[in-house]
Structure formats: structure tokens, C-alpha cells
Image 1: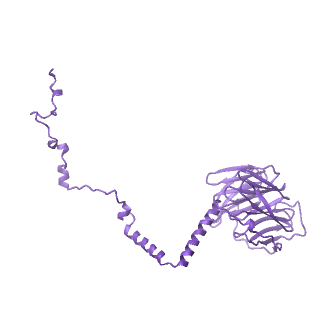
Image 2: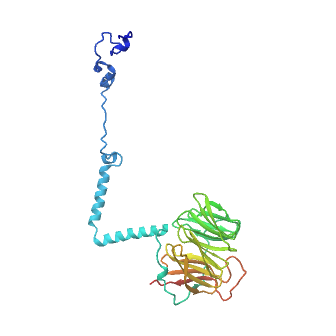
Length: 346
């Protein structure tokens, strides 16, 4: 049946009156090059995907970089065997230090410490002139610590706050709040995290960039001191005679009124100072074992502070006739000063 509509029957486009077969090449829309383009003489640019701009030297000067790489290769080729060993040793030492600071690697020192034959050597004269002052706290400043590798100083005070200072610029940065009572001890590693204890029976971990904190509550009447072992573990001491290892679980060991604790950074060696006038060395074992005692080192006086040298061969103690936070006790036979204990490693 023939259709009455001629438009649906033919395949000839509209505008071709003769009804001849339509040729695409005759349509100006499909013309490969317009008159304007032919007049201006444009040329298409093609980029080979097999080479990047850096390989062509467009962004970074490929020839110059290649010359630098060749010089570096020549330098390594010309170094002697001793120079190569020294370079590899420096690289290995740098990697070890980074792993120790991050807490992923811990030096084994405690098992190598031999029992000291001699006691502490006390240095009495300890006076220096003041070079700068940082006003700001409304109460007595009870503790100070630097962030490792920086000029940032953290100060804890009886006004229940922790302030951050830039010692190099001698400028105030910010204040951390959280404790409901006096701040007694602060400690910090390389990260912007501050560990602090207070008389409110809490130990708090301040995360400065995140503006948040973690609160650890203890049953002790007062947490006297604290220190980092690494980014995930830390020690605390209290006036009820407990040393506590804080981690996935808490481990307590008895001692007489712990007034100070210290850890040799990046190792398993720790020390605690007691109000009875003694210093005890500890081995920090992996969880869930906790810590175990090594040696007791006699020292007359209140051990108000402790610090290890980086090598672990020296232990320094701040000794006083009275406790650092009050005058409820006095040992007349003690001498106010700094005591140094040499440690021999096997």
C-alpha cells in the first residue's frame, strides 16, 4: 500500500528538490576545513601520550635534571669503600633514630645495666643569671618541659593551666585548660602532645593540634609525676607508693612515695625517685608484662626530679632537703643539689 505522505517515503533530505542521492561531501557542515580556518592557517597540535611534560623538559628542565643525576651517579661511583660504609652507617643511624622516636623500635638497655659500685656524685653550686622572663601565670610555676627538637616550652602552674611559649621569639602562644586542680608535672615528645598530672587525681594527654584531650583517672590521692615512654605508653608515680604503666592495661608496683619518674628515650630503661631517699631502676617490658625492678640506688634526700642522658650511661637527680611541692617533711642530712650516677652498660 502506497503511503500518502511523501515525506516518510523518501530518504532524500529536505532541501534537495531534484531527489538525487545525498552526498555527505556536498554538505558544508562536514567540510574538513572551514574558509576561516584556511585563511588563518591554524594547525592542530598533537601531544604524544607516551612522553610526559617532565620528560620533554617543559616544566622542570629535563636536560639540567639529567645532568644533575649523572653527576650524582658519578659521585657515588667515585667514592671509596670506606666512604660508602660511612654513608650507609649514617643512613642506618638516621632510620634507627626515627623509629625510636616514633615508638616502633625500643633500645634494649635495661638488661645491659650493671649494678653500680659507687653512689651518686652531688654537685652543690647551681646558680646562673636569669636571661629572660615569661610572665603570664597567676600562680606558682610547678613544672617545665620542651618539645623535642623545637623551641616550644610548656609550663604547668598551680593556676590549673598549661601555657605554651616560643623561647626563641620569647613569645606566648596559647593556654591549655582541663585540670581542676594544681598541675604538678608536664612532659612532651616530638609530637604536639602534652602529658600532665594534677592534684585532681587525673593524668591528661592534651592533643594540641586537635584541641582535644584524654583523661586517665587514678585511685591515688595525688599523682605526683609522669613521663612518656613513647607515643603510646607512659609512666606515672603517686604519693601512695605506686608506679603505674599506662597502656592497653595498667600495671602497678609498690614503692615509697614516688616523687619523680624518668625514661631513657627510645629504650626499655626507666627510673623512679622516692621520698624516702632512694632511686630505683626499672625494666619496661612489652605489654601485658608491665615493668619489673632492677636495682635500688641509695640517695639521701627527697628526689624531686630525674633525667637520663640519651646514651643511658648517666642518670641525673635533683635532690633537696624538702619536697618540691611543700614543706611537710625535711631531711637535714641531705644536701640541695644535682646528683649524677654513672651507669655501666655491658
